[in-house]
Length: 110
Image 1 (tube, rainbow, N blue to C red):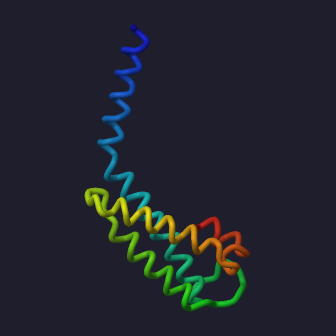
Image 2: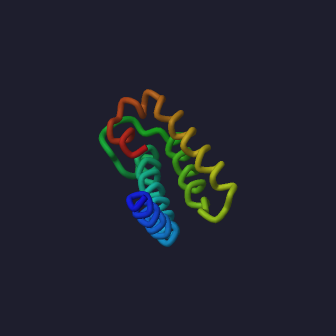
Image 3: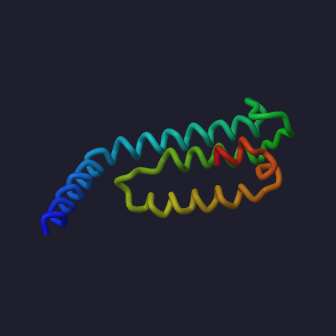
């Protein structure tokens, strides 16, 4: 019973810390995602190179749009949960493209 009580206290404290840091964690992770997808966008638009291969403006613009989508997500908005899921699915789909699949750096950023 004592061990269960200790576990409850530890779990409660962990949960309180998570809630306390929720916003900063959210913004930190969102910023990281925006930064990575921005790099991919710049790469495919030909503005920055991850490694040498063909420029693809359509893919670059697609990643620019993805950056805008990610940047508008808000942890307080319930609709953002659907937006997160859609972004994950879209990124999973784009990873299947040969131009992405053959580029290890792009795959890692996604």
